[in-house]
Structures are given as structure tokens and as C-alpha cells.
Figure 1 (cartoon, helix red, strand yellow):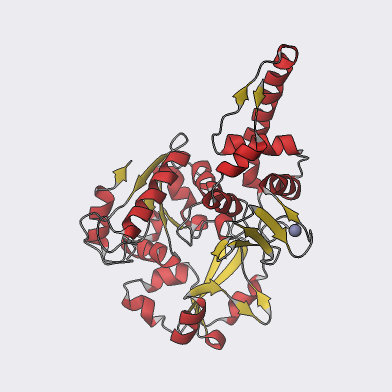
Figure 2: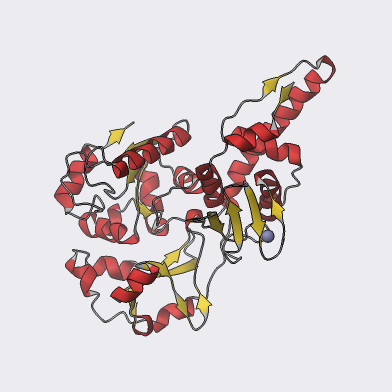
Length: 367
Ligand SMILES: [Zn+2]
């Protein structure tokens, strides 16, 4: 029978694996000095908890500072998430197997003639359950916010910084981009694939704020924070879903603005763009695109390197290869990669006009 060594498996997980899992589960993780900071998806559904779940890299343990108020390891975390998100009763062995399967770790074959048949059967049963879970992820329903808030923003003022970058007024109107004077922010509503209003992000126009908190962040209006787990949704998918099914292709950008430029250059009726709103793509996001009919997923990330071969270049390349390896058995993954340096440092492939974008698209790499 197949035996999995719990300790061995736990030790072979690196912090990026943990991060990916948390991302996939909708915990909106972020790296911190001690390890990872994450929403309390140990006892809450994605998008509902506060960022009080800590993962300590040195001990490999989680600590939830609210509902659970205890330490636990990744396997217990799997048990908790399965329970909270999928209403499934996992025991520790199920969790160990699930993790092993997830990261392609093999068990050790051990003789145990009496149980052999039974074990095989159990493994198979478990396998179909895993398939079941993969499909079940489609049922994640994010919390819906009251759309009334959107009527309070200003849609008549010209969004000059974005118009100057070439985004058309038609694209801004289509995406309901507005302005919130109270926060000096451009307002970017996020919808799920069924057009439910599930998040609101703001692009601050105040330089001090941007330096302090970052340019883009969830908006807070009248004490209500309009956040959502970014890994559990795709920006603009509600608009591009049908075209993705027809063309069997999808383009993933990092930021919302790139989708607006895409609509501008190629027309709303040809839009196949989405944004993952970060530099990580989750399994859930890939699944959404495949369900819509995508047979090729084009990764169009920012040029996050100054020279070919520098440290940032190596990191980007490593991430892209990791992505390819993770999903290559399910869908074709290709990359727009500016190896001839025709765009600027940190530019999205669509930032430097339609011609350059088409060139990069034509030269995209299927690893
Ligand atoms: Zn908890």
C-alpha cells in the first residue's frame, strides 16, 4: 500500500507552496517579515475574515489570532478549509494525501497484502473526491456589496491621467470607472462572472498616500471596506467571458488598467482580457478561464526586469516556468515576454501602444 510520510511532506513544502495554497483558497495572502499574513480562512469563508491568520516560516505553523486562537500546521489547515469552504469532513490522513497529490509528491510502496486491495480502492475513491473538489471550486460565491455606493461617485469628471495614457472614454464608461473626491481616488468596481458587485478598488491620485499604502487598494467608504480575495475572481471576466469562449483564448494582465487599454485598442466586442490584480495567478482563476472555453491562456505580465539576466529577470522566468509546469496538463499556457526590450521597465505589454502589443503577442512563447 502507499504510505505518505507526514513529516517528510511538510518539510518539503516551501513558503511559496503555502502562499499559493492560501491564494487559491482566497485568503489574499501577503509576505511578511515572519512569513505570511492572511485572511482568517481557517474559520471564515473567503472575503469575510480579517487579516489575523499568521504563518510563521521558522516553525511552519499557522496561528489564528481570532476565531481559532491556536497554532496548527498545514494539514490541519487543509482540514479546516475543506470544512469551511466545501463542507467536507477531512481527517488528518485525507489532508496528508491531498497535499501530496496537490504537489505531486509520491508515497512509499509498502507490503501489506491483506489491505492492498482495500487501500487501492480507498486511493481511487479519494482521487475521485479530489476531482470533485476541483470542480466544486466553481461554486465559490463571494460576498456581494450594495451597488448603491457606485451611484455616489462622479462619472462626469474626466479621468485625465488615464485618458492621457490612451484609454478611451468608451472603455472607462463600459467599466464604470469613476472618481471619488472624498478619497481623491479613481474608482474601479469589481464584478464576478455573473455581474455581482463583489469589490471596489481605488487608484489614489495623492502621491503621499500612494507612497504609504500603494497606488491601488480596496476602498473604504463610510466605514465599509469593499475588499475581496483577489485570487478568487478575475477582473473584467464578466465582460470578456463570452468572447473567450468563442476565440478559445484569454489574456491575463496584472492590472485593471491593461484591460481598459485592450478594450480601447481592439473594441469592446473583441475583448478577451482579464486581470489577476497582482503578479500571481491562482488555480481557481485558471479554472474559471478553462470553464469559459479557453484552450490557450496568454500570460501578459509587466516587464519586471531591467536587463535580460538580472535578478528580477531570473525571478520572473522562474515564476513563469512554475506556472507552466503547474497547468500544462490542462491547458496551453503562453507568455508575452519582452526579450527585445521594446517596452519600458515595469510596463505592461499593452502600455506602449497597439503595434508593440501585437508584436509581443505574435512573438509570444509557448514554453
Ligand atoms: Zn481561525
